[in-house]
Image (cartoon, rainbow, N blue to C red):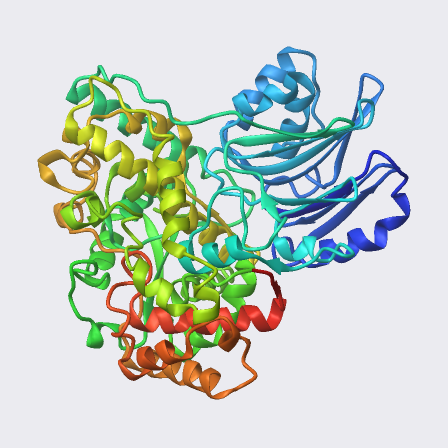
Length: 615
């Protein structure tokens, strides 16, 4: 796990610009605190910041391989889970290896397969490979976009990096937010449209895409997507295949040369991962699995039951730890920390995010990093198996918009009148919503319910899940910590995508099929527990804290947020403790306190990045 940067210009000598490369690379120090490396040549400069996970000596980057009179040079961020299988293929075809890093296997796989290498990879990755003979740069990103990769083009120079902040260290890259950026920030945010960013002319390589930059320019191509097919397996066979795919995904992701752990909430998803992982540790005669959970000061005392947050975690965590071969640690975070780290969470993303939902995960990873460097999490099970309330609620299914973000009028009202006259958020949201639905492939053989759920699943996978994956990567890597997501294994996702909804939502339950499969390995109370999302603080002191922070911003006439937002409406939100914004800002967790925190993050973002607003 690392950070990568680089730039290439095929029309002139840029080798003297290594000071620029170093400045860019330094911005990624948190992603890769252990080592750094550089490759300097006439037409390309590559930089790397390394977090050591596999093969400390043999995995140094940039890695260079001389083959067929060409230098192949790679900078890479990620983990390839089918390294062993690829290595066997390469050895059979005459390749030899100096170490056991997946970096070396990835580089030699590219030499052997060329651009088709992406069809042979199972993992999380963002990488760039330079071919000195053809003077061509190849860029690729994993199937679901777990690992980030941003780019821009300026004066025939392609500039890329793991984070936007690194690109801004390249000379004369302007920070401009136009009407699309405003629409992304306040209409879509904290989600974003794949391929775009808030900033004008700063793009991302989309998930499941690769790019080739050569003398003819930049060519981008999609290499994978979920394909709708008739599901022919009976119920028993379906369960067997899902179980096998899931167990393989989990055990494949337990590879590490540094301490590894599992995040355990006592929910279905993390409990499944912890169970399989602890059994693996036991079978391999390894030390007990390290597990970690997060809680907040006085959370049980202040907990209020709701449809979205039906119960707290502690009882279920204790139940699971008794059932596992593990050593468990509970991390307790206090309210002031959550508020104090809102700025760090914003910087980690280079944009406002999920407020304290982000800062809490950032802090959680910070504390876990003291005892481990890699963790598996239960993220993405709800998207893959149909676990969110909006899969079942009629008001969400018939909202004709993204069901986790239905407060469109309230979002529009947040904009100050001058900007609101130029930026119609509803039009932009409707455009993105319909554009996304047009990609969905339903089958004539689909039942009405399955066809409907394909659409909601597509939206959830490509928008909501991407937001959570962004959050996981940025907040973890800000601490030099790697998060892995077994439920995001693309083989598993391909199979589950085509399971009929009636089978997937067995007994009318969210993740009904997954619950049925888990019943063999987990306590019944865990299996039957109603979905409870990532825990957030219920301590009223957090509301008081962010309310105070936002109030002080509103009193500051120089605060940049006042140039963009409707001050009168924000004051109403403050006076009502967030209730003037009548529906959640985003998803299940971002209610009144989180909206206030988001607005604080917007002001922090405007102060730090100082973008030019062009409407």
